[in-house]
Image (cartoon, rainbow, N blue to C red; front, side):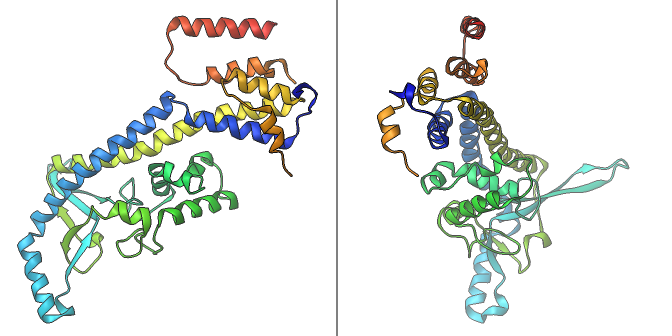
Amino acid sequence: MSAKIRMNTEYRNKFYNRIKDVFEKEETQEQQAFLQARESFNHLQKSTFDLANQVVERSYPKEDVNTLRVFKKKYGDPCDVVAKDKCFYFAHNEDVNDEGEKEETKSHFDFGLFGNLNGSEYSSEETEHFAHAYFREELKEKGCNPDIIAQQSGKDQNPHKTKHIDMCNKALGKGNTSHYSDSEHNSIGLAKQFNAPFYCDVIGTSHCRSRAIACTKDEYNIFLAWRSAKAKVVSTHQTWINSIMKQCDQLKIGLKAYRYLSEGIELASELGIKVDEAELIRTNSTGLTIYNPTNLANMIKGMKNKEQTREQKIYERMKYEKESVN
């Protein structure tokens, strides 16, 4: 039956979305690297914050914080100098310059969901990329596209990209401020839940940039390692999405060349994806040799970094070359 049904744009889109969904769920090396990076960050987030809390309490002892809160209760706003914060400038003085003099090394560390990945106080697209990748599954369930920044990497800003970024940020509960993008008082939902465990009591009425909290060089390096782990979540997510997009690019070319529904069904079958022809037709609403279904399926399979033995790789290559000749 399908051999007589001509392919059209809607059928092509159905095949594309069905196969792309399978690509995203496959356990490839890129996917596993991303999941591992996210898990490693989770572990470091808690342990590193515990260290940060110890460092902060050395500068702002609990006894002093409690005393100032007593004064605030007694005297009101003039003594309102204790606040909770999740971002800090940490600094050490153990490095020396070329003249042998000690010099301060400091950077900004933000434990919030939309906290920076590079030492800047301000959020950026990279911080949004982390937040979207971290809560990828939750955002997908809400009908958002958490991969949009990775998919649009290297491209100029455009309405499509902006629309999906805004949808993700809204779904996460990102706060709207001119400085700290997810402060304690304006974040909601997932962003607020993520941030909640990572606040320390600090003394002072100014933003964190006005104070550098002393730490040792070893402690500072631990903070740097934690921030690198956060950045790795972004980089591994980008690599994974790039691998999916490369496969999807070939998929689009092949589907565009197909004239009959049967070719799409054969392609899906070669990729190990079951497509119900009757269901495909019932839910319908408003080539180059290398792109025959078997060859295209083999090409896409070869683009996946799955674990294979040397013998398997040789077999797949010989099979591909034989089918290309035929």
